[in-house]
Image (cartoon, rainbow, N blue to C red; front, side, top):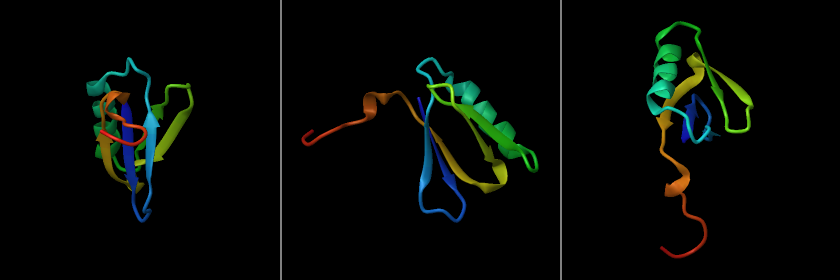
Length: 77
């Protein structure tokens, strides 16, 4: 599962690839909890075990995606 996060005043976004067994609803709850409190921090762990801390005051938007099967590499359809 992929999580894409837009950061305020930054043209690029952060993309974190979560473990394949990550629970969509649990990730969404983490995002909601971080964004609901003042000066909250969103902590996410990628599929390699690296931890990311994102201050909720800097988060513009969050997209919780599905598995890698949607990614297309190369030319053609």
